[in-house]
Structure formats: structure tokens, C-alpha cells
Image (tube, rainbow, N blue to C red; front, side, top):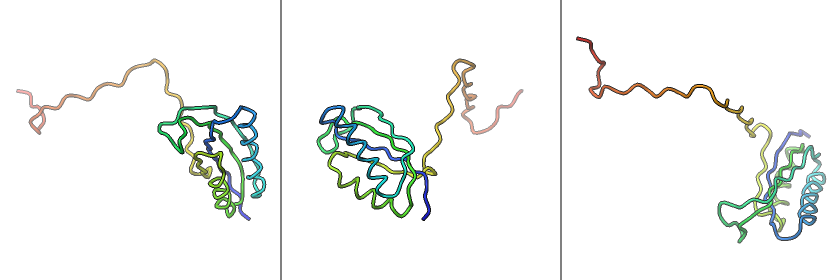
Length: 128
């Protein structure tokens, strides 16, 4: 069995109390373990407003999971997540698909110079 690193971003329904949301997140970790995976990190990203309503939900509780699992079990894990009533949306990506965060842009420093204006005649400017 080949195992790979994966990252899952899950949006949970916000109905319920904070301990209930923690319980649902722990249930996600348990599902990963049952599928033969190991959870490396489980991080709550808090409640956020959704860009548009999903399943009549205007807000969702975001949760990020980083885990290792056999490649042939990811389809089964996606099916389990789809059947879970507390999950509004989810996305599972392999570590290869996850882009590295961009390095921070330097603060201050010179501004980029604007491009030189075009002559408008399609040719180069000649000196007389």
C-alpha cells in the first residue's frame, strides 16, 4: 500500500456549540484513522462567512486536516465525508497539489517603474 500526504479543508455547519464542533472535528480524525491514515495536524480556522449560501448556510466553521493515508482509501474517505450531515463542503488535496505559500512581499523599498509610453506610430522614435 502506497501512502501519501494529504490536506483536507472541511467546512462544518455552525449550528451547535463550540464543544459540538470540536466533537465533529474529532469525528473527522477518527474517520481518517479508520481508513488506515494517520493525522499529522488538525487545526480549527474558526467561523467565517461564506461567499454564497451553501445548503442554506451563510457561515461555516473551517477546519484544516493534514494527514497520511493509503491512496486507494481516499475515494472511500471522500464518500464518507459526502454522507456526513455536518459537512457543508470539503476538499482533499494531495501534498503535491498544495502550493507552497508565497514568500512575504518586502515592506517599503522602491516602487516598480511604469512602462515607457508608446510613440503611437508603430515605429521607433528618430532623432533629427
